[in-house]
Length: 133
Image (cartoon, rainbow, N blue to C red; front, side):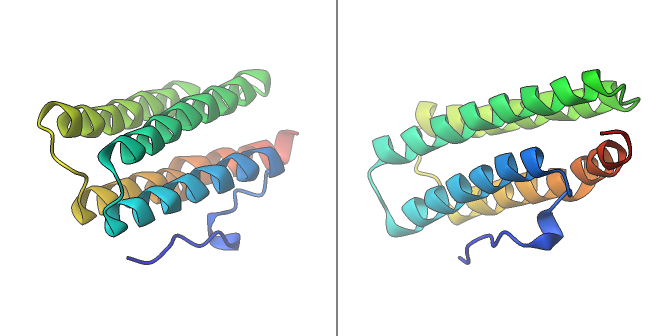
């Protein structure tokens, strides 16, 4: 599986959000490598915890910016954030409860989850913030 490469395609043109996204991409790549290399399940779970915690922090950061700058799409964007967090937590719970290791399918799901949100809702937010900041 290839690494996600940070480039201008994933940039929302707002430096502080892009920095958060770069960190999430780095964590995703660490997780992907660990899964593919068969690292210890406890280590993979620790990476998942870190990815979830960083994502929650990042979503709070975005929501604060949306509040500060009066983003009309806040409610819908926040709902998407909640759904994304629930889906990644469900993936982690399934792995823990069923003692199943993460698979390449799980990694593909997370890749789609991360890039889909950045390329969709976050691009709209970045365009708005670029006009009002």
